[in-house]
Image: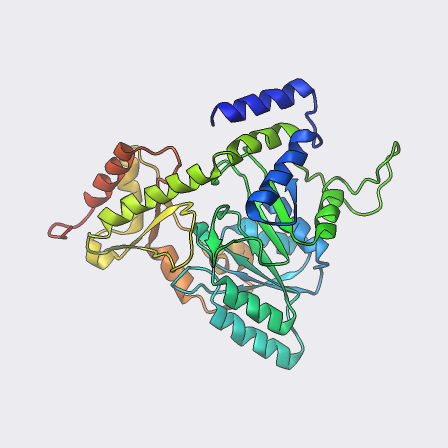
Length: 369
């Protein structure tokens, strides 16, 4: 947080517009749209709320199927259940860790033959790295299936010169406390279909018809972002490129040094893409390095350094144990071998140095660096 956030927050406070209305909400939506190159955006209470509204806007409900990656956070997939639809989980591919387009192609081809195409495909740009978006978008266009982009971790990520979240029919972002920028809690729904965004604002405001009375024309939700939090977001957006640069600097520092250690490796960035490196993930081969990710995590914790496992794939979760899973070997291996290192935008060089020394100290004797 900086001076701009404080100034704008106090301005919103002094205006006495506290609820989910006010000039800062309107301005935040416009500034996000301009940055992303999207036609319109609706500021919401969370990224999860944005996903839920996306499914409602697209008419997804009971009896429909939605293809989604298994390797993601549960908030990506839970809203499929909110609307009564059925998730079909797709494995990752190794180059971006996103949904595997080859597996998706096989499923869509089979569905087309059987007349059982899904209602939507939702990609997730995991850990701030763009999925193979062009390939997936072409498949969706070929079979007439709507594409949704969960870019919660990827504000500032580019794929083929374009912001992720702006290729699909609807894109979704998160401003949770751990994201690239934050409103403490918040989300964004973007689309080049202004009517869809207007409908998102309406349904996200309890579907209340404008006027003095309390008349509602649909099932609505209390999903709009407050004016106070939008003011914080406006201050954060002034520094979005700085935040992305800081995250990328973390990653480059870790990779340049730890890549030299036998048994450690990192996800490479495809040519032409720019990821946010939201979290810096190190892949560990325990047989070579001499320690498992969990052993490293516990050792770092002893030194007051917090690290985390990767997302547990959805098909391994009790909630989704009955969901259809296509593949699974890639994301299961990522989960077993990955560890998220400290990645905050405020990390200093000496902080990263301490992290890397602690990781290196976990190596088995004789491991070269």
